[in-house]
Amino acid sequence: MDKDISTLLREIKDATGWTEMRIATALGTTQPTVNRILNGQAECKIATFHAICALHALKCPHARTSGSMN
Image 1 (tube, helix red, strand yellow):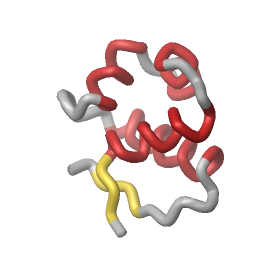
Image 2 (cartoon, rainbow, N blue to C red; image 1 turned 180 degrees about the horizontal axis):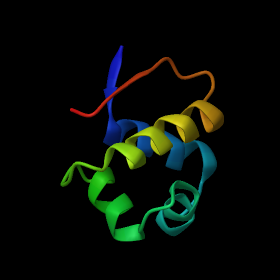
Image 3 (spheres, rainbow, N blue to C red; image 1 turned 135 degrees about the vertical axis):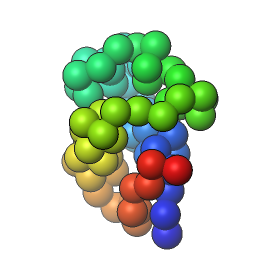
Image 4 (cartoon, one colour; image 1 turned 135 degrees about the horizontal axis):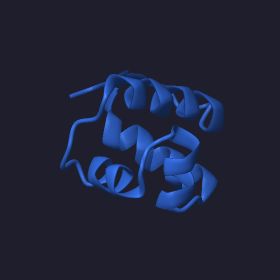
């Protein structure tokens, strides 16, 4: 099952209860970037994509996923 990047980020937010700012800090990006991705309004840098996938694997280990930049 492929999930888009905003879905992965939403699952991280739901699983951790973290604020957008806390997620941004963990990803090495900014809160506005996290907000745009969560709302499906922006694509992200490949480094941010990889960071989201890694954080998702760490915080949502039971979620079946294959991250997609779509």
